[in-house]
Amino acid sequence: MYEILINLNVLIILVVLVLSLFILSKAADFFVENAVKLSEILGLPELIIGATIVSLGTTLPELSASVIAVIQGNGDFALGNAVGSAITNTSLVLGIGALFGNIPVDKKTSHKISILIAVVILLILPTIPYKIGNESGLIPQWLGFVFILLIPFYIYYLISQEKKDNDSLLSKEGTEESKKVAVLITFVKIFVSAFFITFSASALVASAEILAERIHIPDVVISSTLVAFGTSVPELSTCIVAAKQNHGGLAIGNIIGANILNILLVIGASVALTPGGIAVPQAFYAIHFLGLVIVMAVFSFFAYNKKINDISKREGSILILIYIIYLAANLLSTI
Image (cartoon, rainbow, N blue to C red; front, side, top):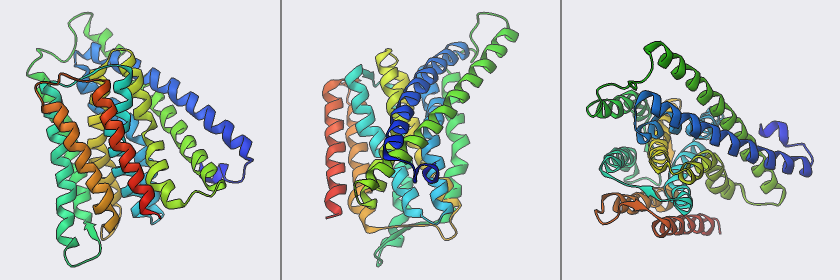
């Protein structure tokens, strides 16, 4: 997409950016609508649908961008995109979503957050031994394969936990045949909308990046902030739509699931495709990993605090503030 747009007139690139935003918004709306419908057909709660199907669809931009970057030999970009997107999702995206409607945090939500915290620890800890005595750490290639192998176990765990509370994953209304047809049609609609989300997000990132280059914004700022934000736009659109439609469970399920998949799938695939693993620069420990730990700590406080039943505008504002600080740290690191 970048190669297609790079030589075009600035006005045309601006039109592409606006059009991609419009398509992305409509596709996200359609995505949420059918994800909720699927949850009703299968008898699954919104949190599970959000943490699996919706989060997989909205993680496609990060996956495609990171894998392409790794193939081109830019491992730093892939790592920065995935970690930056996880921070953006949990702070800015969730924070903005809370401004449009309260997002519930209950016992089931805290269980999903525990999985996310474990995955974050699994990402950071193995890099530390490589950091000792060296300027940079390393995410070894074997860890990438471990992350990928954990994905089916993660999905199986989510579904098996719900089976304990439901006699059947399928709703009891209608014939089995009609339910199967409804599920198939809804799945097709979900993946078609996911395609448009991915395509429009790719166009959005490319057009925004080119416009930034035309006004001479440093590449390092673009890769650590703009690209990470751009690939998180699907999560933002989905979260806002879900919150506005009073589907807060779908919104937070999407955020948690997207973050887990950003690490297990995006970083996992990127590292697995990189012989020798991906080096972790000092800046990641000082800014990105530190930012990830801080935002997860604040998010966990909201989820585990029994006095807080949902993430409202107040908590959302705190999360947005954390993102602003993270963004400022990125900008200051380039000076």
